[in-house]
Length: 130
Image 1 (tube, rainbow, N blue to C red):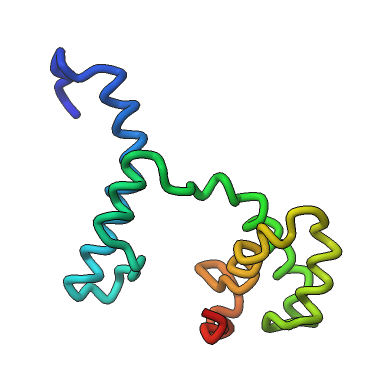
Image 2: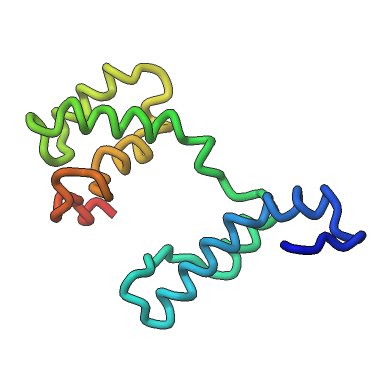
């Protein structure tokens, strides 16, 4: 912004920080809905956007330790367990300790993640679990 009007305050910036993720997700979903092949389908609707903007949606930061653990587990075990199975689940339950049941879905999501920078991005996610 070249010019900062007098009405534009630090509170304005703080409010923007709260809704920025909601705007980003809404924009990504809108691009997908209008046919962009590069935009992800976030399965998001207006209710999701409102929750994010109000700060009531469960933010990523609340689950970052579980995501981090799942990603690290993938790096450790992906050769032995290329896909999620009961043996891996049992091993990770022991490795993770307390709160495994609460965090299991987030751990699994990160374990199965094959995004940019991953050497094996082709089809290792098991969508049948949904």
